[in-house]
Length: 634
Image 1 (cartoon, rainbow, N blue to C red):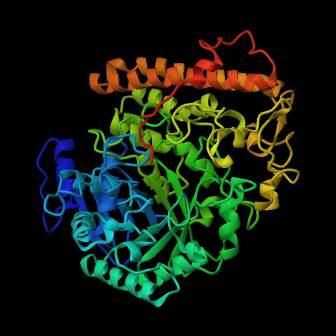
Image 2: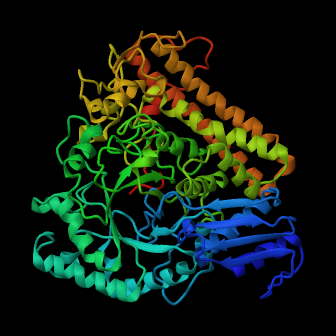
Image 3: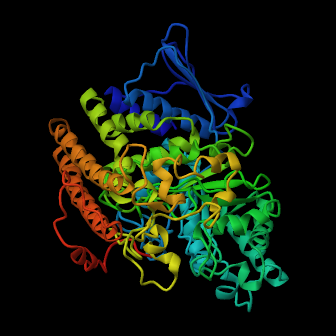
């Protein structure tokens, strides 16, 4: 912390910073204290004295002091008053992690910001300055853990040579309060240990993992534990041996328990056979296992029931497993949100999920109250600005801030980030905030309005493909999700359809159960609705669909105009980069609008209203577009 304060304050104040053992009045007083137990191991307190000539930063630990120091610097950088300070801050969630989908060859699955920052080939001998900067950036927003490797795991990370490399990173991250975690490939005892089985109930398998875990903790005493993707999308798992997810998770949990390690077991699963409704799969597999997991197992649940869509209802697992700690999994990288070129501020999406009411314990039982931690799939690569799009850094920032305090508003977080990243000038702050706060809704409008979902390109998920129907599993195809026909559009998940709504508490389900009262944002998630269905706006469903797609395009054009107003205030390089990317976003928004409306028009048999721009090409033109080298595909 001393180094961070020296580096920052000397630049902010334009003069050298001196440290003394005894305060002489004015200045910053830093102290560790055991007097305030409520601060815990990570909390801090910032207080001004009666004359506002000194500020005291106190915490119980060095990590608490580091967090408090970063908070003080943030107040200064954003030009907040430093008089009459009385800040007492502790994290609401103990686990605040990044999940890297980074492979050992540095390819980043669903990555759009270059290759992985982790250069395994040169570790442990070469410590890149970026590793230190990465730790500093995470600590500054309260992130205290990182999963270094892809959930589609490679057992090589568990070899002795690679564990030495992991140790080198752990040593760099430790002073910043960051634990390292790894992804565990369930079949590692076969691939690395020479066993004939990975059955979690076999003693030789349990012994292999116990020995491997002992090896890890000998090198890295504060190793956090494992994140596991099992029996999903081809990954091996306990079901290969007719065992349950609990059997598999508990075997690993027992191995790490003596060292206070945890297992984060992902709930993103679906059966080998095409299910009645993909929406229901995670709940159907995990709800019956509530209470069967060891206490150091966290079930990690995606925010929605499908797969990081522009808008999803919250997963019905939240609140449904009271005897099992749950981790929230958000996706920072924009796999389904325009990837590396679309400006989409994700905090409103995160808040939409965290603030949703499960009603499990009565009104006010928010999703936040049902989780013990938050993980975000990282959007970081070796691009010079970490995240490719300059505004994508805001999503990394927002994840850390919301994991520390889920009650913060999207607007407050956006303003903090803008002031630290772009400028404290009122014009810049207000204009950037307007752009950011409308960006997510704009993206929903030009991609998946009214509850449409999973209509992106196959595999790479780039661009629109609502006509997609060529993959071997029905639920890999967009037509499975929108179900458009001459009668209407949408997936009936009510009691007369798949009955996925029954997985929610009745009070939560009631908000979506009737197509006449269901909010427009979720209508087609839960109902197959007639093209003539009258919407709250007075428009028919078809007219509303046309309006929303065109509104999304108009919103992006507004964002372009707003950004142009900032040219005098932003450096040329970053201004031009955002300007060019907004141009791509506008063109792709038009592409989404035209392709989707032309496709759905086949079923509605209604004209696109005359007040809207007509598509520039035929449906056949859009259907023939191919992108074999779109980035990020697994």
